[in-house]
Amino acid sequence: MFRLMRNVHLILGLLFFSYAMLFAASSLVIIYRPWLKPTRSEHEQTVRMAAGRAQSPREVALELIQNHGLQGDLRDIKQDGNAIRFVIARPGMRSEVKYSAATGEAKVRTRREGFLETLVQLHTNHGFWHEFMPANAWSLLSLLGSVGLLLLGATGIYLWFCHYEEIVIGLVILAVGLIYSLTTLVLSRIA
Amino acid sequence: MYAGLLSFMAFVVWGVTGIQAVFLPAPGEWQPPPVSGHKEFPFAGGGSLDDKELAKAVFQAAALTMVGGYYDVRRDEAGNLAFLVYSANGQRELTYLEKARRVRVVFRDSGLGDFLSSMHAGHSRRGAPDRSSRLWGYYNEFSTWAFLFMVLSGIYLWAATRPGMIWALILSGVTIAVTALLWVTTR
Image 1 (tube, rainbow over the protein chains, first blue to last red):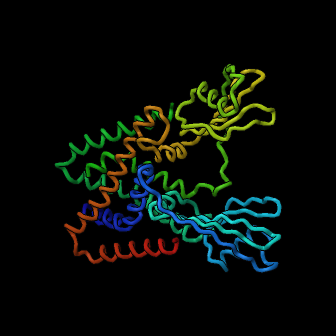
Image 2: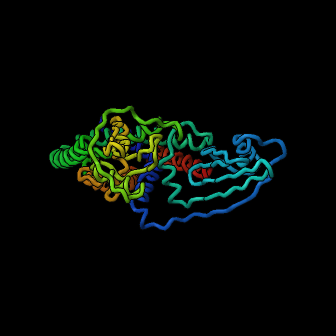
Image 3: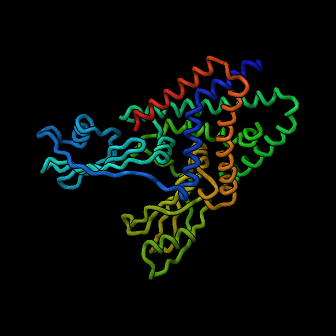
């Protein structure tokens, strides 16, 4: 049983190594963000839409995605007189689009985040509702990784319990951690 | 092992939050929890204060727990000053009833899952200023470092004790390749 659990622990650890590194690193970026310099680039472009093809925000977005290299989810649609504003976003990239039906031109302002901020946006990416398929894949990885984290914890507890010489000190450490964390959690919940 | 035992509760909270997050609604589809209670208290607002200053005074007088700040300051249909406060335990809607000189607080308590989701984001400088929340933040931040340490030490232990396991090498290669492919596709 010990050998089986050790292999399960190893398999889970290897399966979710990248995911775990992503989440650990992005969590540290979130915590120490004030001390980190964000790296990002921005650029603007004007796109002339094919005549008669783009009517609604979704059609404009589709035209930009299919023929002008933008990728992401369509968000924050706003109608402002004759102009349509919306955002096409994916982790690490956000394009703000202003389309004028009168001129048939779309002004696209794109912000590309650096490595660290992209990690953070992958951390907060969630749900299976994305039109941008890789975002759904990251969500699936997040779901599996979260289940894996719980299983890693459970198998880790079992492996610790098999080290008889470590049980007493381990119990003390586990008890200290549980008492501290549960007390602060419960006090926060009933506050 | 000791790092994992000490941080065990944080990992449980993160795991539960990660599972719950996958099933959160898309942006724009979120609905606040139902009203769970309300209270009113007398408050005499200063006549010379603008709406932002008045909101701050009402917020301070309400002395709500587990909250960080106030948002969406506006005038409602009746002309009363209204704003939102987010707590780890749910949303609070504050309205200053100027004619009655009273403040009404509507509580929308969140479920346990949303509470844990709020708490999982806490650290030494983020979260409600309440002492319990701050102490949890220190634990959560420590656990983040412990997590990074465990990931790296786990890889070291595998490489140091069982480096020749072919299936483990293949598995780690596949994992890294899939993540790299996803990264490239996303970027």
